[in-house]
Image 1 (cartoon, one colour):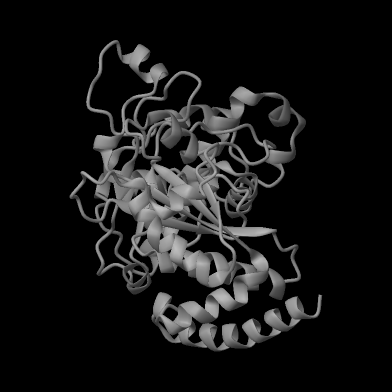
Image 2: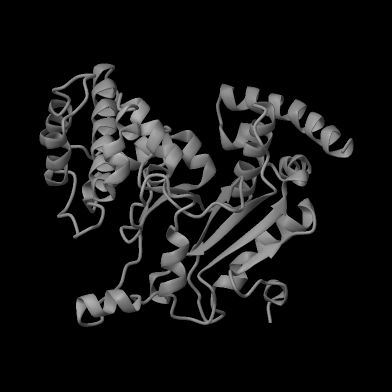
Length: 356
């Protein structure tokens, strides 16, 4: 039996690290826990760091904070407060899609305006996206929202579900996501140490901004080998037969696009089975639900390693010794300056913890 399996919580396939050093050891060992010994495939495990271990794997566009941010970008802050929207749950998916569409259109418009090339975006779709901004900064009407599922970027909308994104738009959405706009994608990395860094750095940022610090941070570890997944029973019934089942799409943009993304070993996951939750729902289920319902082996497809956030400063110090810091994760002048700031924040954070 693997060392991690001896201490794994069976009910949710999670582990609690004793300290920062133990956390890094567990994250490194996680790969052997979720890959069958018979597998010889390389690079089939990816990682995601989160500053709050209670968060699920829900895309930012489907979370309350992401909805609010999209509303701000698209000048629709008032709309999400309207009583009618709060009462009509069936209206929320279309509303979220409309905001996503408008945010994409604004991104393309501003990028075009300063001559930034967006790969794999043909002229017809580019013109259609920018042309959709006919209302400028004004509120879009319900008719605009209702028409959005038929826009070129999406496939047909499943009944009661979220419109499915067309393959040719994966790269555009990943570029937008990487630059801070909430989308239906989830950020992951091939490097478990980068995932640990991102989770710990967020804790120091929260402390710097005088935000409430969560109890635990976490790193999720996911097996992305499709051969280890089968359709959940609901999907099998719907299809009437077993077909090749792809639970999610892996999106990797060219390394030449972004030095940061390349340095981070970054990639994105799009899972069309994640349903858009009702606005106001706390911590809605996400990719973890799909992974738990679809696995075919006795090995868990997804595990979570937790660490008490009081060790965040020490974790960043250990990662720096391993060559993982803000300067290497964000390889530019801003990253260098961020690392100098983190060195100061680490000392302050450790002193704060020690004084408790």
